[in-house]
Image (tube, rainbow, N blue to C red):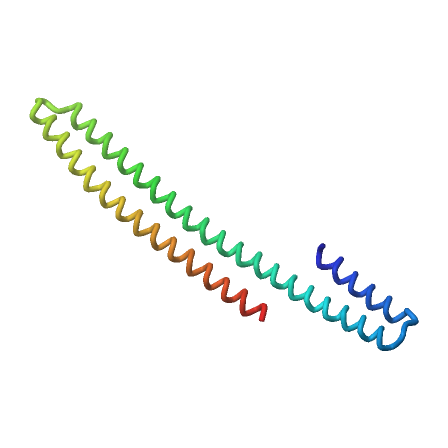
Length: 149
């Protein structure tokens, strides 16, 4: 039921009770019932709209965090691929087996350190994004709850 239809239904019910020839006490009770129902309906519509706003805010926050994490992963993959190609190029132009071994060893050490740092950064970023999402959800829920009171 959309909001316009709901309001029209309540208006029609009020008109019906005004036009009927019923005892005054019955009409008063019926009008009070319609008024109470209209108030409950209005509060339910407001709560549903607030809930939709909360869900949109949470989804927007989650999407922004996901986008940041994905961009960081792509940058890390690009950096790792470039390092691998640079090492491969250096190894391909090496003049001796000991030089190749040294270049491979340096690459593995550099890649291990780089991967450790990238993992630490992603974990930190993910933790902060999750914390921000929880804070956003909590804040939105509190706002929504206060607006329904």
